[in-house]
Each structure stands twice: as C-alpha cells, then as structure tokens.
Length: 307
Image (cartoon, one colour):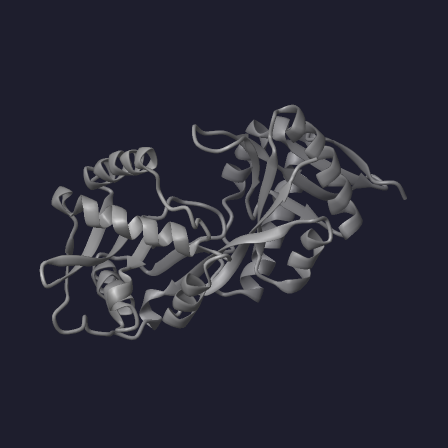
C-alpha cells in the first residue's frame, strides 16, 4: 500500500494523542527513568495548536505515523526545526522516511537549515534515524536522587553561591567547557562580553542557582542549576544541572563529583526527586563524568543538515 502524507487535521488529533501516549508508555517500560505520563486533554489541545507544523502518515486509511517539527530561530544560531520525544511516531522506517522527506521540504521553505530530534536511547530506534543521515549531537541523562552515594567535598574546597566578583573566573571556566566540546578557538572578546551579560542576568534570576567551588581564595569549579520546566518524558521535581566545569589544575581530585553531590543533597532537601543533565557527544570527558556519577542516558539528540 502507498503511504499518504498530509498536514494534520483536527480529526487526526485523537489518534495522534493515542499513538504518543502508547509510545511514551512503552518508552517508560523500557527505560524506568523516562516519565510515561501523558495528560491527554492537554496534549490534544497542543496538537491542535501545532497543526500547521505536524504531518500525519496514513496507509489503508489507518494512521501509521506522525511528525511535528517547530522551526525556531534566535540571534546566534541559524534557523532549525526541532522535534521532541513526543513529536514523532512511526510503524516502519519507510513511514519515517516519507514523513521526514515531506516535512524537510516545509522546513527548508521556512529557511531552516538543520533538523534536531530527541530519540529514545535505544539502538533500534536510533538506527532508524541514522539510516536517514542523522548523527548524534548530545545526550540527556537522568538519575533518581535517592540513588546517589554521598561524597564529602574534599578538604580545602568550599561550595558557595557565585557572585559578580567571581565573573572573570566563571568566564575562564566557560571557556574550558567550549574547548572540551570541540571549540578549539575559545571565546573572543565580543563573545566573552556577551557571556558576561548572560551570567549577570543569571545571577539576578531567583529561579537559578549558580554554585562555585573555592580553594585558597580562588574559584576552581562551577555549576548552574534550576528547576527543569515541565516536558514530556521528564519527571516533575527534576533539578537541571548545566555549565559544570572544573579547572584543569584540580581535575582528578573528585572535586566535580563532590560539588554535584553537595548540590544534589541540598536539592533533595528542597523536595527535588530527580536530576537531569545534557552533554555533547564531542565531549568524552563529560560523557565519562556523568555516566560515572550515575546519570543514565534516556534520550539522544540527533541532527541532520537539511537539503
């Protein structure tokens, strides 16, 4: 039978909701750190609002797949289309292929140059996308805070909140992250000024905590945390960890693990139940650290250049 691809209609919404709910439930059964809960009524309304960016696949009058891709843009990156874990379903690789082909034409018409999609960290699911030319870009990892093993901050190191007086050292640590992710050029003066503005804004944000580790009156490590916004596939009460960096002079001494553990101990006392982080596949040091700390990959972000 030939697969028919068309834009989503309101009459498709209930069937798409059912497919998403079933898929997330199966994902959660396969991976216990994936949240399989779906508010079907809210999802139904979301799908209706996103009908212009959603395509459905029918075969023999049966819904066999769907694909949603939001074209986003900002001031620093080219336009790109984004698909979350709930934004795609398919029964066979052929249906995925024709859905991507149809959607890519619309994304290109909207001046998008790349497509990013979050896929369950399961080889057969990832292989379906790799066949279409997608490659891994980053990993999302999760852990239950009840599973962590407490580690004290090493003697001579102190965890505290960052202040504006720490700015220069924070910028240095940000450069360490960029280089580790594959940016061998580092930050230019203009980029450093922009980063300074962003960090200043974060320090003023009551929803964000910017931690540093101090040793001998020098900042040698940092981490930024905030409550993860509600999103399908992730649990409520999840603390998001980002911008974790340790100065090379103290790496290998357990500083990063102790810093994260002290942060998570506080978070657990504040009612958080899970921690989540994201890291680039081009940063093997981060991959080794997060997996070794106890975060388990749940989703992989894949990318492909549109053509």
